[in-house]
Image 1 (spheres, rainbow, N blue to C red):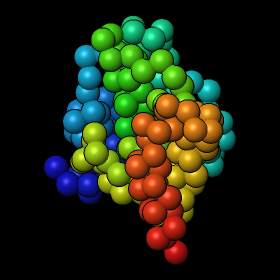
Image 2 (tube, rainbow, N blue to C red):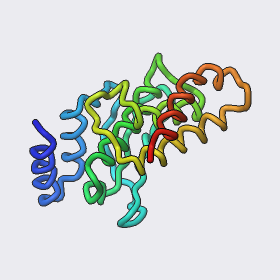
Image 3 (cartoon, rainbow, N blue to C red):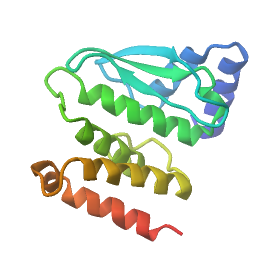
Length: 169
């Protein structure tokens, strides 16, 4: 199914106010599913121009991805990247693969939005969003602690993020 067909499906879901079904359709269509995923739920909308998604649940337990009802009022590439970010958190919090450090989880998730190594079917973001989310990745890298073991672990990936940001117009 191509991007245009997916958009048509999403419009049909939206017309019938089936937002949770539309989100499930996307994770199936873009191979984002994981056994630690408990489903979608609704969270409060921030505004017509901004959105927040979260993966909620205890570390090592099933995760529910909370989405705003106006999720599909935004650009589909952005929506897919935001959902992929949360679905990476679902994996990071799964039994046997828990990543304890929030800074590490966020650095990995923001990096995924830039390079799509875990979810290769997710479309690229605009340069504007690459810069923004790249900045977020670098902020979480900074929060790992200057010269820490975590920073050393992600040094090469941090360089990739910086190179990408510096190459953008």
